[in-house]
Length: 379
Image: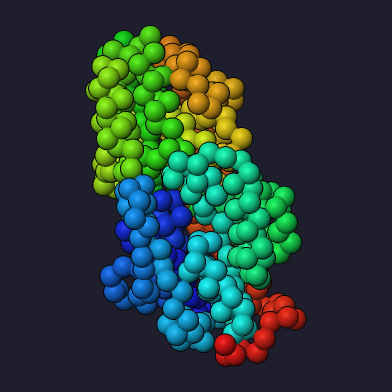
């Protein structure tokens, strides 16, 4: 297949949707001709689009550049494509789905970002605003596609509840191959060290502040080593919070090699995020055999991965998280059962299977063009 993959930010992104785009493009290129349309530097197989950044600290720190929907550039690529994949519901995405529809090229839209992600990063936590944005995205973006892919059934249900009628497919972001440990690791009660790992953007909705406060409350705080791997706008605030509570916490974006080592060394993965369409960091940690302690948040699909009530805490509640951490530190056997459950559930989200599922979605929209699509090549 000839695939035009439209995504605002590609190589430099730290958000899950951008990371997912790179992984899927690399996998698809083994069997298909994929042209990426994105902002950033030129590269083989990539067509560069003009871009812009919102002059806000949160957007700069998240390394997200919005693409501008240049019709001339997109038209040339779409005319040679069998299918167009549009990754984000932003100005570039809105322009891309409309142009592909007018040209008669099958188009697949992806749901990788929730309105809550956008709003919380600019300081807005107001349900009516999120509900309005859901409806706006559905009407102006997702409903114009031939098919919509969501990383979880949770995400698909959200869009349907807001009026989506287009065919919807669940395609997990998947667990990359080669991350599972050779052997499970459990904590030794006699060991002076218990490593807790958190991975994700340092942003409001990820709630790393809850993890810091929980470790500070733990009966085992002197034994716990906390690593929060990631970059984002809240790094300085989180560092100050940890210092104020007398904690030594390792912060920062890490290399793939360093992250793999952290997965191998850690005893527990903690994810306090309150907004997740799936939770790529959670899947990776589970694939590496880490027991995962997750926030029970209504706007997060990640809570479904919990191995049981022992691995699920009240969202936004550091006292409850501290109680769960203490119970797990004191029960290595429970950590072992959680690790085994993680590996089993991660196998159900194999990345190779996700790639095949995405290919099947492309093939399905190519085979059945909708009757309202205009002739190919008409702009």
